[in-house]
Structure formats: structure tokens, C-alpha cells
Image (cartoon, helix red, strand yellow):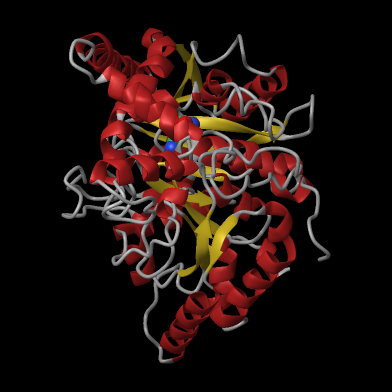
Length: 495
Ligand code: GLN
């Protein structure tokens, strides 16, 4: 099956003239027709746009134009990124029917690489959540077990990869929304260094934490996608004006001999599923066998990361989401004064979790409380950055399990916000410090046979190290398993 191949294998077939991009795109659209009724990864499928784009790439290829490595390969886009003329909802009723008048920089770069965009994927409303159950439309289901969550907030993107509806996807990660869905679906996800990939056209949740990044089924595919979207963008004032690290080269190299790998003491133990920890330790052994040196590091302020995040992220969201005022975008309900229209629109347009965060953030920022809450959280953030700095003096990369458990059942945590927040306990520190992180599959947990993730973290603009270590581990594990982890997933659909 063509859809089961990696993006780079598809790219080779396109180059060799074995398949056209139109046929490759059609194969993915058929796969979406076949399984998305069950998985529900997509909010919008842009059949015509995708086929027209594929046709264009085929024409360019025929005329002998030099094309980028991912030219003609399909991709799924998280529905928090704008794409001109294509519905962009952020998983919210607030933006239902809104078609942005401009492309995000990520989309502009995908287009200049001739990547074919299949459609928009489901997510938690405004990317707030860890299960995609907060989408105002429907929950997405985990292809490993349709009664379980695919992670969040980018569950649609990761599920589309695991269900072979797309070989590549874009996610966004504010506190773990690329890495945690990757972990629970048996796929790869990378949160680049903050400022490494432009946020222009990424609908803002928490601007100092939000980061778009690549999702794929293999480390090498993620590397190609990362290089295609990364780099300085004058339209984003926090974009880093420096060369993109040699990501693809690092993924191809995959040599960890002599590298120091730091195991973070605080990111294991209580609250982590034993099978997840066992796979984590087995992965460490693989890396040691490949010649890496494993050291233990302590980052004692990581224990406060979740508390700091749930003050900083809601504070920024309460400010960012003020723009949804019934006057400018999407939904508008009621008549009368501006205040009453705004009131009824925001009451009807935002879901429960978004409202909870706006209230939390407004409170944390209010006069008399600002220093006690927001100010303290920012100080903790600095301490966490210092922990990272000290740890990176002892190790080239840091590692932990990506998420404390495998995928839980739909509905299991939806009434318990704190239990939901705890899914990101191991991913949030990276966002607070602006450094980069990757999740790749570590195996299937013995308790439930579901995939778990191995997280690698590296310093700012050291994203290439993630790929070096990720490729080494992936290679060792795939050899051990005799194939990719998704080969062991239940087969959805007839084919
Ligand atoms: N789950 C975290 C939250 O709810 C992270 C979300 C994200 O990374 N977008 O805020």
C-alpha cells in the first residue's frame, strides 16, 4: 500500500516517475474516505485544492524543474494555522465559517516546497487540552483503540499519521501538544526551539510558549518537514535570525557514540505507568549499547513547572482571546449594545475549558494579584531555564518519558481538569524554557499493548541533536522489532 510508506519513500517514487502526485494524493483521499468516519482526524478535507496542487507539482516535475525533497507529498495541517480561503476554526464554534484572508508562514513555506495540503485536522479548542475531547466539533479517536484519546491538543494531526491518512502533519506545541499526541499514537513529533519556526498565522493561545513543528511516522520524515518550515521570518517578531541547524544531516547521521545523555531524575517515578518507565529504561539501554554515556541530572524546579504553566498560559490566553469580540471574526450572536452582543457571543462561542482558562488568567493578571500569581510564575520560569542550563552543562541532550501514561479512554478524564493537565508534566518544562524537544515511540507498554513515547530535549537552536539521538534510537528499535511500531497497530479499513 502506497499510503503505508514513509514520506521519503513516497518522494523517491515521485522522483523515479513510479507514481504521480495526483495519484498519491488520490490514494490518501481514498484512505481518508475509508477510515476517517471512524478516526475523525479531519475537520475539513480540501479535495479540490489538494488535487489542483498535486497537478501543479506533476506539471513542474514533467517540465524538468528542480523540486524540493517533499514536493508532491501530502500533509495534514492542524486547524490552528491559517490557510488562505480554507476554513480555520481552531476547534472552536467561535471561528466557525471563518476563512482567513492570508496564509501562515508555515503554509507559505509548505507551498514553496510544493507540499500538498490535504486538509485541516481536529484539535482541542484553541489548542487547550491533552485529548482532543475539547474540540467543539467531535473528539478524534486513537487508531490503536477507537475508544481511546489520540492525545491533544493536536490529536487530529497525530491520528491522521497513525491511520495512514497522511504521511506528514503540522502540529503546534504550547505545553506538549505535538509530543504527547505523538507518544500515545506511536508517531514522531518535534517541538522546535522557540522562534525556530514562524508563528505568523498560528492563531495565538499563549504567545511566549506556542511553537509550530513537524509530525511524522519516522524521524527522517520529521527532519525533512522541519527543515522545510524552519528559519527566520520578519513577520514574527520572536523569530530567530540565525541559520537553521543541520537537521536532515543529523537524522541521516544518527551516531551517538560519545554523546552524553542526561536522565532527568524529576521526570519519572510516582504517577508514571510502570510499563512506560520500563520502555524508557530499555530505550536508555539501547542508547548505551550504541556508545552513548548515560548520566543522571537533577532539575529540581521542574516540580513547579505545571503550576507555573497554568498561570502563564491562561494569563496569555485571556489576553489573546480578547480579540474574539463578535465584531471581527466568526460568530456573532444577539442584538443590542456592543457589550451585550459580545457577552452572548463569547458565552455561546467558547467551550468550558477555554472559559475556565480565560477566568483563571484574568484573575491571575488582576491588580493586587499580578505579582503573587503571574509574577511568581515568571520567576519559576526563570528557575526552570536555569535548571536546563545547568543540566546542559552535564549532558548533550536530556531525556524522559514523553507522557506519564499511554492513551486513556475517551471520557475518563474529561471532568477532571487537573488529571488532564498532568499529562503534560514531562513536556511543559521545555516550552517554559524555549528549548526544543522530540517524542518518538519507545514500544508498547506491557499492561495494555499501547504505544509510549521517549522524549529527547536539547538546548535552544540545538534541534539537530534531537534528530541525531532520535534517529539512533529509532534505528535500534526498528531493528529489534523488525519494523516500525505502527506495523503492530490494528488495521483499520478494508485494505
Ligand atoms: N495540554 C496543554 C494545555 O492544555 C498543552 C496544550 C498545547 O501544547 N497546545 O495547555
